[in-house]
Length: 272
Image 1 (tube, rainbow, N blue to C red):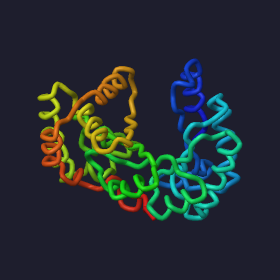
Image 2: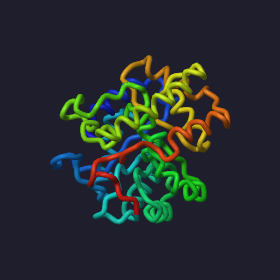
Image 3: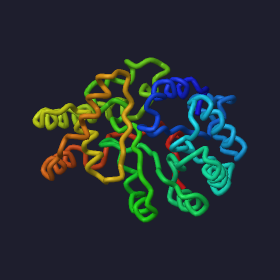
């Protein structure tokens, strides 16, 4: 998804060990028509899905996309048509697995009936727990789960600043979790988590990622990183063992997630 620049970069980076990694990309936005304020309008028409797949294959320089996600549910295109288009791509060998993002139970069931959904991607972290309500459905259908923003968009690293200190183009400037009142409470919670992490000889990020891995065996977090060192540090979270006592302590600090919604008003995805 996108202009293809990141896909070209990724394709070059992994070309010598392509078979050792899982390559996932997305479709579903009309990049020619930016909206004011937030994002782009959805476009998951079958012809657009097919075009997006061909573009991604060319940009990546690969013969097959491992996971092809619909980035957001398109209210103007029946999910059965979307799943049917991806099924055609899977049958043609261009795509291996079908993924959804920010989809609700009815959408997941309807898509799964046409083409089995292999994975759902939605925000999930110590800060955001709403998606847990979908876990019974995922388990019933045998669908895996990918957690995006597993570090609360960077808040759960101890480096968060007040909203006013971010650039105008940074979404954290309007993110409810960074706003006065919520920000201070979230900082206090992160400080307590930091004490627990330090007692275990770990970083905050490692604690947060380990917590996710302890929730379900089909949960895979995808933290973003801008440096090799950060990637290495995050990866070490997979080796951090949390005891029942640790998990209980974390639950006391953040029993229901962060203070403040995960998006500003009007931007929270609607699950159907």
